[in-house]
Length: 410
Image (tube, rainbow, N blue to C red; front, side):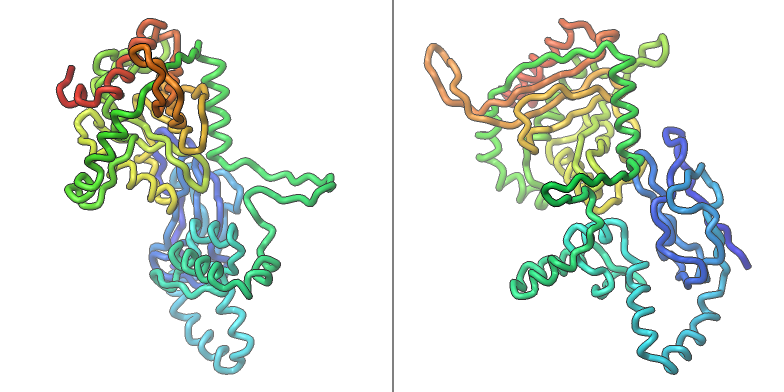
């Protein structure tokens, strides 16, 4: 009996996807719930799993092909895996030496996308790894362990380096080379490019700047971080939760900054869904904290940590990154001192955080060295006027420089 392998049902915000990787070849055995193919959308990579044991009978959509929601990707012959097993065992008994390479090749077919990428980046041969995941699947943790083992084996390091595959994310060319390599954009990068151009061409975008003295928050964090972590079961107190909390309060006072434009209509949102930019192997992604106005500092920190882990593991869902009424991006973690973030449509504003840097500041007629951070608010001038934008940013500055105001609602 043939079972159709179909693309998943995409939400309305995702028009289509691209076949990224087939993890099985036609004629290969497949186990129930084993990864068969990855579908890359402009938001996430979706894993398509086998519905039953069998053999991959046909591939309808090849790698690189565009697929729509629920479109046919291929066909699986149910029960083929069970029938193929005795033959495989017989072949192994007759020619054990020939069976070994086939088994090694099979290991490579059951790497998760995150594990595969990590192995490539670190020059690890996937065929040399023993998978500890379900069905012998090589997990990211298996690759991490192999990387650590490689680091602790200095004698083998030169050989491993020489054997590292050339398929890196960015090609490396020798000095003096005049070669070129053309690779297609990932859907995520292409979508980011499309949205950035859309924002620049369709918005009257301006940016206003201010700076915030981080000393009060840093002092508060240093005083209570250990108690906070103990009280909230290992959740660490960072800076982002203060910025999210301050943003939700400022958005209540200036609802236009939390609004969006739909044609000739202005849509005011009675909730604050805050998008927080996090780094992943595929680039910068923006998962959303729903109803952040009701979240405590601990809940915000836990939510961001969870998103960060899911991003590294390639497990962010489309729902995680859909929506959002306001975005916060922290370029400071990469060393950015000042930038002009670009608004993510249909939102009308985005806050940019930057590097904390000690600078001489005039305080009550005295020069004092303080840890300062530049803040940038980019906004759509069609919706938000300059006074509202500046007032919003000043409100955030006031709340951050006196964190007690967040608790007292003043």
